[in-house]
Image 1 (cartoon, one colour):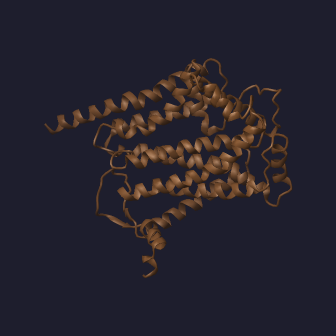
Image 2 (cartoon, rainbow, N blue to C red):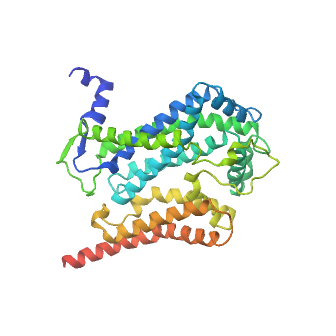
Image 3 (cartoon, rainbow, N blue to C red):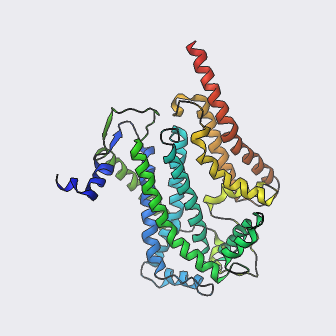
Length: 382
C-alpha cells in the first residue's frame, strides 16, 4: 500500500488500476488501448531499423535491402514496421468512427476529441515522410507531388517548398530532413497521447448510452484490463497474417523499384490510409482549393463538438442519425476507392459527389438534424 502512494506508482494506479470505468462499455472501447500498443510497436521497431538505415539518395534503397537480407530478423522488423503503420491507421480509424457513432466528441469531452484529431494529423504527417524513406519510385514521386502542393499557398508557398526540399528538387537534403522528422514525430505523438489520456481521465470515459453517471462504475483492473488483453490477442493474430503471409499486400509494387527522377510512374498512388483525403484533393480542379479542402477534411472533425447541436450523444437514441452515420461511412469508403483510381471519368465525378457529401454531412446535415431532433422531442412532449 505504501508503494501505491509513491508519485509514479500513484499515477499508474489512478489511471490503469483503480480508474473508475463505466460498467457497460464493450469491445468497441478496446481500440484506444490498441492504438497505444501500435504506437509502441512502431517506435520500438523504428529505433532498431534506424540503426541500419542510411538516409542518402544513393544508399537508402540499398540499406533497406540490406536490412531485409543481411540483418538478423531484419525482414521481420521491416515488415512489422511497414504493416504496423497500416494497422495503426486501421485501429485509429475504427476508434474515430466509434467516437462518431456514440457522440464521444460532445461536451464535456470536446478537448479530448480535439487532441485526438491533432494526433491523427501528426500520424498522417509521420506516415507520409516515413513512406519517402525507402526511396522507391512511389516514395520519390509521392514526395514530389505532395510537397509541390505547398507551392499553392500565396506569397510564401514556393519558399516553403524550397525549405522542405533543401534545394531545387526532392533530393538528398529532403531525405535527411524527412528521416530526422520521422524519428522525432512518433515521440511527439506519444506525448500528445499522454495528454489525450489525461484529459479523458479528467472528465471520465464515455459509454454506449452517452450519459454521465457517477454510479455503475468498476475499477479498470481486472475487469477491463482482461478485456483489453483479449483484444490485443485478436489484434496480434490479425496483424500476424499480414506480417507472415501477405507482407506486401497493403503496399505498392512500384516502391520495390529504386527511385529514378527520370522515369515518372504511370499512376502515382499514396498509401491506402491517405486515399480518402487524396480523393478530395483531386476532386477540386483548383490547386489551392484542393489543398484547402483536403486540410479542412481533417479540421472539420475537430470542429464537431461545436457543430453538434443536440443534447443527445449516442446514436442508440438517434435513429435518423444512425442511418446518416452509415451513409457517411460509405462515403469515406467510396472516397478511399476513388483515391486509388486514375484521374478520368467516371471516377472524377464520383469523387466530386462524394467530396461534396462529406462536407455537407458535417457542415449542413448534422446541425439541421440536431434542430430537427429538438423539434421532434419538444413536439412529442407537448
